[in-house]
Image 1 (cartoon, rainbow, N blue to C red):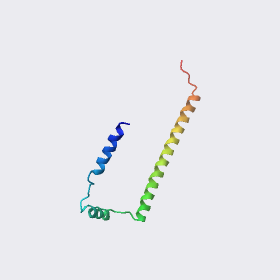
Image 2: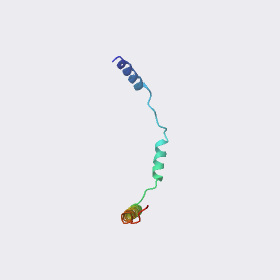
Image 3: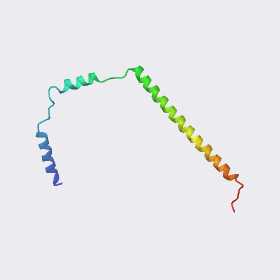
Image 4: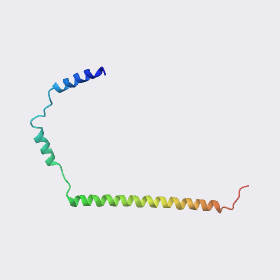
Length: 89
């Protein structure tokens, strides 16, 4: 509780500090930069979305194919172990 008066005093000091001011030419410079920013048109967005969907579907297909091949290889190994009639001495 003893720290509260110090905190109030510091807050008052901060309120008395001068505000920061932006340079006069800053806003026009920002607006010029925004005007130069390239925006994508809807056909470009469609092309980008189609490419992303194509890449995603190819990756999912490859992953499913890889998992299937691992499962089949694992089943073949298990089957060969179950049917291996060669006993070691």
